[in-house]
Amino acid sequence: MVHQYKNNGYNIVLDVNSGAVHVVDDVTYDMIPLYETRTREGILEELSGKYPEEELAEAYEEIRELEETGQLFTKDEYEACLQEFAERKTVVKALCLHIAHDCNLACRYCFAEEGEYHGRRAMMSFEVGKAALDFLIANSGNRRNLEVDFFGGEPLMNFQVVKDLVAYGRQQEKLHNKNFRFTLTTNGVLLDDDVMEFANREMANVVLSIDGRREVHDYMRPFRRGDGSYDLIVPRFQRFAESRGQDRYYVRGTFTHHNPDFSRDVLHLADLGFQQISVEPVVAADTEEYALRREDLPQLFEEYDALAAEMINRHKEGKGFNFFHFMIDLEGGPCVAKRLSGCGSGTEYLAVTPWGDLYPCHQFVGMDEFYMGNVYEGVKNPGIRETFRGCNVYAKEKCRDCFAKFYCSGGCAANAYHFDGSINGTYDIGCQLQKKRVECAIMIKAALAEE
Image (tube, rainbow, N blue to C red; front, top):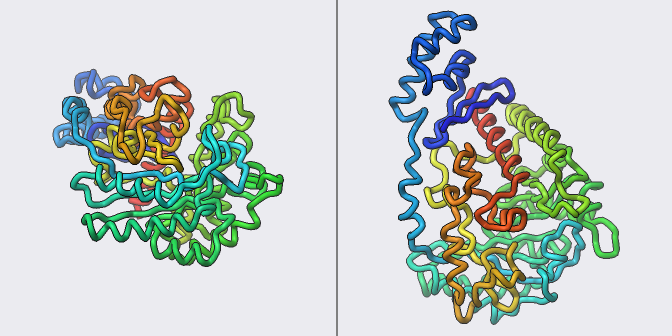
């Protein structure tokens, strides 16, 4: 499978199965779509009125050489391994601990219902968190590196338990030859010097929630009494990012139907001094007034293109920053399992409620049909695990012929379920945006490679 597109003055050709990327001239770009179905003579005849014969002959030989060396028109070798992949043994390697089912903000788009997750407000006790870490260790097999994300709601509302669980985890590392990578997601309202000092010592990564410009952020992320949170959190986030050397964190925002000009929010965050930025599309039902709509797509595509071009300019000026959705590895990249099935939700990655229940991920928490068990008794419904084990890009009909499938790994299972009724379905708006992001990310690589 070959995907071709033009972006920012570049003719880009992606060989999907090998991952090879080629930046080509016009004659090669026009010849590639004809190569597999026409003879050499037929191709040269069709393009003879547009390009000189010498250029056509040279382009044909270049394409033939790329095919022979496995860089163009390569065969799909992944699907043949699908049965073995589906039967692979998996271990639990990551937990999302819902340390607090409560929040001090009232974000309009919150899928967690201000932290309640279709249930009640609650704080995870140390005893439940301890049992969760014990469950992770017991179900991690020979895997040494384990990940635990402190999530909410707002996890800093239960900060003492966070600290106690990290201390317990560090004790268990030595006893079981494990290494915990702790992460934290926070809205910043309770981010103070003590939290910063602890996070800089213990947290491998911290996600800082902010949506961009003051008016955008304050509209979508107010306090419950209605006033905005921007002025409170921005200076704290700036100081925290600097304290971490502008590394091992992300400022993470969400754009909605109200700010389709989201590139301005990304650049606003960059202008505030942040160098690790993620601003992602909201995922919401069509009934929500802030939900993205199909009619938003043309502008959103233009925004991604404009953002990519500006990022290149800033990089050349020595003012570069990372944008999470444009970060792509064209040389190594993720392993085969990651390419085929993504985050590992329901198999390698589970979410834990404040009372110890297990779900495939944080977006399924509170949905009875996805209850898997609990940290004391383990997985009691292995059928759910097996269903998620079978979720991959070949199980999704719309993914099979998609050029981006090995970069998005089939997308988010929760989004697919909510919009298509099955974890093997797709969320179409999300797919369209993902494809545009992949194209922009590859173009950025091509542009920077010229330096």
